[in-house]
Image (cartoon, rainbow over all chains, first blue to last red; front, side, top):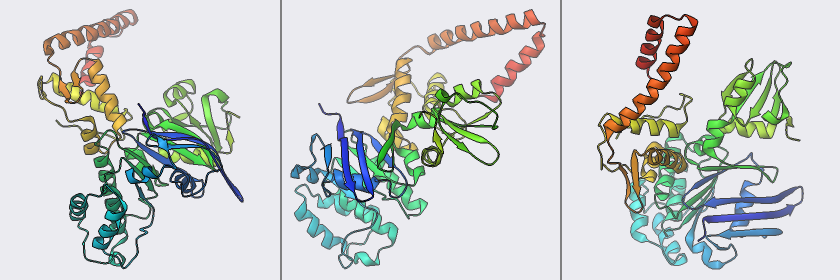
Length: 286
Length: 125
């Protein structure tokens, strides 16, 4: 039995001035995987490669247990991009006509009930929608054909907290079926911090880590100490200097706190961890 | 069932869920055979990841507080509350015995230890 809804192995893609380098990770069934990284780190490129919209140079991608070039795959996935890419003069009803012809499993009843739930009018042109409404509409369109896998690329960017919360609700709703998965890229780490099961961090086209979110939040930490303190390289992951102290990202904050009693050890948010990896001046492991 | 999650307590969230369900079973708020919400439903209600809730349920199952029937969900196990309490009391006795021994050896008055115990008990965790 296949346990992953997405399995990416050694994926490579070279552009002028940027390259995805041996990207590997997986999205298990029944899980939400958050994909974080700064702008330009390679998140969207990875997603376009998974969707086979870009040609990969090397590596393998399996989606729902099949090679991602298999044309039947797209009937079973839902995709949402950061902008609403539907034509502005179309109404929800027009989109229903278009999409019901595209997907063999289109469910008009589900589509209409979702529109009602989010109070999206059926007879108004998309151009009259607010940004939050457009995004909710995009997600409704992506869900109405009963996909098993939902891929979102920066879907919560630029939305207010209320709408973002509604979207998280929707994703958790979708996940009530344990065969479903969500792959969710965002640079708003707080959304991922709430609901993701796993977190994948990409930086300059390379995967920095793939880790269970609870491990990151419950165990990782920041150790702040004076410049004189000697921290063993095996205890820390990344080092960062500020004007008045030295900070280390540590894998086990409880142990580090005991070992270096003079230092302050704090919990690290996902944002802290991301910043450390990206901005830290030297890796302790190198 | 009521669960109150604190994001600033420093205690892992799965542990908070686990403890709160345990104490509700022990004080009788949740009775034997009662169905718990499914892991996915609870994750949705609390806006948590499924893994977090799953871990709490796994710990509860391991400790004999709940039973999970595949396809049907999780239920409060039909165990003996008094038995669990008895067992936990024994663990507490062991720890108190150690505290008493430390007190005796180092000349800490009984009254002080009692006060500390009372303080800890009342302030919760």
